[in-house]
Length: 338
Ligand SMILES: [Zn+2]
Ligand SMILES: [Zn+2]
Image 1 (cartoon, helix red, strand yellow):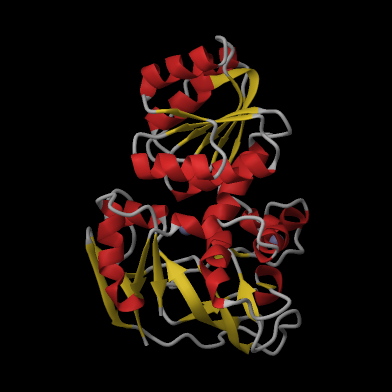
Image 2: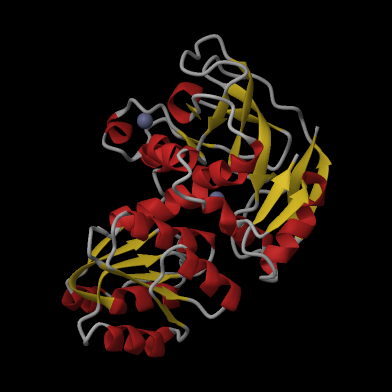
């Protein structure tokens, strides 16, 4: 089997890899219907985040169960399943309160940019659809696996409720789906911060009512102007840099909520500044598993189309071009067909 392996900065190769098999009795092996490149894959790709290399890549997936271990009960071969980037037992105390990405037995699911994937803790991790979904829904279901689940958590953690004034910082796939999630949760106004016209269009499509193109202090000034000097009730920080985090916190009203779902890189908080903002901060790796059943239903009911964030589709063997296109911001998100 061939799959994507990162050998060094911007050195992504489609090479022979070991074919996944059942290792533990709780495993499943899934034949992927589609996979994709994540914004977070770009950190190691750009050499900003150190990884042990060569590193198999990919953590977003959906497909048909090929084989299960002897103790797996909730999914069976032939079913179409979706899982998230952390395998979780869904039974420990952290899972029980909805933080499956902090599962006491969590395992990172890696190697999904390939035709086959081993998923540990299959019973707790995978959710099966009632039937095999039609082909046109595959991109939407794949988006549920990470970017939609993460955008949804961003809106949830930022306490988006009916009528909320929401700001979304970041116009990548997660930010755009944060806009969609805010709309689905009934936000009254959704201000998307974006400088790119194609992304602005998709943000509008997903429910953004206003677009702010400025960044940093100018961006914050714009938000304050749009909110009569008060700031937003809810701010979704979907990037993970110092600038975006600062912009997010300063855009929130006193007592407002800031969620952050992009892996922070070099982000530091000044205690005193934070103290006087009176904001609620809540973030972390999105517990996508908590939302999977609901989000799968929304897709199958035809209510949402999160798959529109995939603006480039390539055969899996062209995965290196998929990375390049996202690295150079020619594509929002690349879908790969094994
Ligand atoms: Zn991802
Ligand atoms: Zn757990």
